[in-house]
Amino acid sequence: MAKAKEERIQIPLNVPGDPILGYCMLAVKAKYHDPAIELPEYRDNPTILALPAFDRKKILDSMRLGFATGYSESMRRNRKELRMAAIARVSRVWVLLPVHIQILDWIHMGLRGRYVGLQSVDDIKREMQRIYNSIQRGSYKVFGGPQESHSECLPLFSLPGLGKTTAVKMVLRTLPMVIYHDEYKGRWLGIKQAVWVFVTCPHNGSVSQLLLGILEWFDLYLDTKYIEELGDRATSGDLIRKVVRVLGLHYTGVLIIDEIQNALKAADRTELIEFLTVMFNAKCCAFICLGTPIAEKLLPNYWLQRRVSSGGVLPKIVPFELGELWSVFAHSIIALDFQRNAFDEREANELIIKLYELSAGMPAIAKLIWRLTHYLGIYLEEISKEEANKMGIVIGKVTPDLMELAATNGLGLIEGMLDAIRRRDREKIAALTPLAEERVDEYLADSFVDEAARAALDESAAATEKPLAIVMMLLDLGVPQIDAEECAREAIAQLGDVSLKVLIRRAIALYEKSLASVEDEGSQSTDAGSETNGNPGDVDTTGRSAKRTSRQSKTSAKPPLP
Image (cartoon, rainbow, N blue to C red):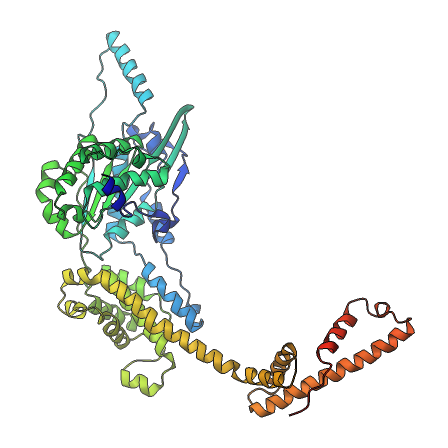
């Protein structure tokens, strides 16, 4: 057990650092909505009334606004480096699809199913005593009503890169993570309600590390000490019982276990089966299992035997086919256009078809291709029309040819990716997607950002070459640096793009003129001082006399002309 503690990785989700959930409220103080809008069995339950009311339309509207990606046509006029930076927004395009509505419905219903009939220990004691008193008076009643015999569970399996984890996180962002309850109807509750807990199975498949990660989630976000409480001799059975107890103690609504195939592929997967079985029977929370088709193949009989999906199985998340849903998704991506010139509606339809061909309907690959396309398009803005014609592209505009060239350059870095896309081998594409995302990020940084930096340095060097030469010449003549820089700037401002020799002569003339002006001011100051008994303060109370004296001391030696 000690070794498992030392080796565990970041299994609890880093919520503040997550690109989707990072802006959600980690913890809130309970505020109870109108019970009249809930079913009768939910109306006097603080753990349900503290949840957002289930108004599907309003929730979906808030998601659509909350996940909108900022874009304005005026961005086309931005500097190249700003448009380059804005391309990162493509990775943050999240599109609402029917599967999000189904997940939204399941989570809200699953939470209510989890909390229905849930009461504090004191409330249960009072209710039992009331029923018992009634029975003893001759009015027979049962102790409690019918309840579900097991937890609600949603298995959600798909190829990597299709957005199953993103879809669940988008729905979770409509809910607070933790709710603190103080009082309800004048009664003290003092509970910390964990509405959702998100963990990821470690790559090594260790179920012990997964269980420790669940406890660590509570230590991180509820300031508990459950990891410290575990002894070094705790067995896997002890861990399972501890986790189930903690999940119940904090009124956990739904536990999300991502990458569950990692634990199922491991040699000790029987521990995971045991953990899931105990959770099903203990009803300590509802839960969602996210994984690849491998997990689905390893668990079909188990799902059937344990009836884990009483909440219903969602349709599988599969790659897009060319059609209405793909059009909705692709339109959201190509709406982020950072080239100088826009494409029209007919051209947009061509781009949507081309994006499908190049990505095989895989969302993650489609986003990579659109990013690559814009980086390449902005990078090539300075080439000649002849070069553009040879490459078959239009300068400053997205075309199908530019997309194909960008995809070949970027995705060609991953061995087998282009071939898998041509063959529509989506399993191979999904397997290569994490590597593709990593390599494309490196490719864009090395090829374009560095090139842009070098170009910026060259441009800066060219812009400062003449001013620097003028300053160096004046410094050689004994002119103080501040005066040399000022005269160089003024000479260039007056004459513009002329020869360096002419600019140097003008700078020297300006310096000579400034010296003459200082000498004239000095003589006037001396005369005025004589008239006021030699007190310069009586003549200039603003500090100008001291300033002139300082400058005279710097420029007392008049430099010769070249």
